[in-house]
Image (tube, rainbow, N blue to C red; front, side):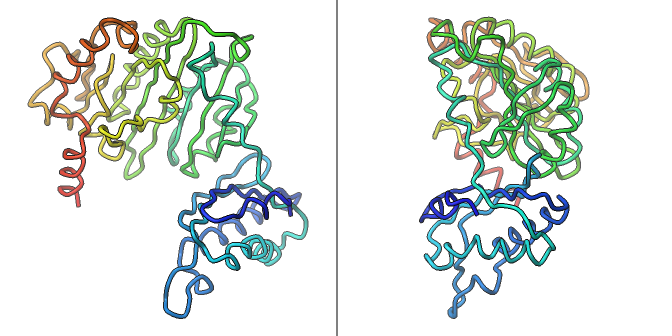
Amino acid sequence: MSPEVTAGLVPDATVTLQVRSPADPALVQAALDTFANGLRGRDPGLVDASGDWLGPKYVGPVVPLPDGPALTIDVGQMPDSVRDGLPARLVGLLADAGVSAGEIVLPPNDMARYVGLQSRCGPRRGRCSGAGGRGWQLAVAQEWLGSGAVRGLVLSTPVEVPAGALAVTLAPVLAAETTVILIAAASGAADAGAGPIGASVVSAVAVEGLRRGELALMHAGPGWAAGMRRQRDLVRRFAGRVVWAGVTAEADAERLLTTGWRDPARPSAHRLADALVPDAMWFQILSPGHVDRLGGPPECAEDLGEGRYGLTVGEPEQWLPSHPDSAAVRAQGRALLAGCLSTRAAVAELNRARR
């Protein structure tokens, strides 16, 4: 076992444990699944005499990384003896599954390398998450990122994606319902100095049966406005597959690493995306739920078919917060979408209605 594992298991820590082994990957995966299910399912060994839960605060999905499955755990306030015993519990389950060789490690965290893009000309990015049936999303990502090799971040761990192997490499990861960030840096982009910065994001929520997934793409650095227009063209073509999509610009690329929009006044509505939108944006695709809440499509919206409408407000450059028109176009967009904006009251109302 890697000594970093023991060092990382401290109160309130969030750690990612990865098992690397030459054994049959199916056996390793099964052992880690059993370990995770025990931590989620009130394993009798993790309940004290009074019935109180001694397990972790959060257990993520088991993600089949190419070099071994991984699992993220927020240990919370587990008792020291129980928390410190987690590696031994996993080792025992691996042995029970017939895995006799291998190592439990903390995989490298590469996220810090790719944040702070607001101060440099940065790489293009994409983010996808979801479960099963995501071929159309991977097709969009492949078209946006191009045909070359890209680097993925899964659980903040670097995953190399060979040229043309996006679907093969990432489909099993997406099936685990985790998040993937894809980076395709143009030549020299990652090392470029400060320059004109813009960022755009496409966020799409797909509904396939009861499953949902998200796809986000980012472009930072020169050419970002053209990138936004290209993103609009992409999501228009796939409009029938999403319940919501938007393209916008921010000066701070870190805000766009997720689709949650880190604004306390705009609670995340991704689970209600068939009726609410995160905020006003340069371009958004609205589906029937949005149109119903608005009492009809906005007058300036374009009919995209299949009950979807596209709404464009202004030009991409106007949406950067540093632009003199920024406040005006945001106000115009919010007025057009007032009935669909994600607010605490709207989220609470819809959650109550849907329960």
